[in-house]
Length: 110
Image (cartoon, rainbow, N blue to C red):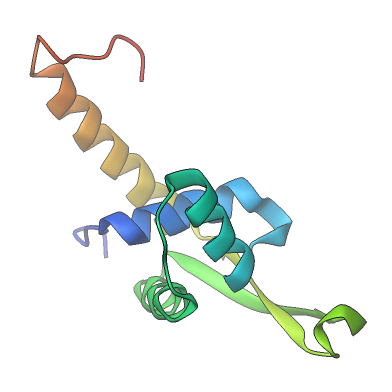
């Protein structure tokens, strides 16, 4: 699993789940991605990607409590696993390393 790389949407979803903490469920992830990246994403793309990330062992999900606001339906809440954190760190390290190898574009603090 350590050799698995993550795609851009996978990386965004993992980062958003970390940002949302205890409120990381499908629709909240969708809204946060749209707000933070100014791009549209379908709820189907979110569900497909979180299912793939869970299969890869990079996140886990559990069902939250039912609420009247959702008509008694429960939210599927997401959290990162240690493998998910490692995948994010590895992705960041690769990108920072590449940026630093381009002197005219290097960012001092990432």
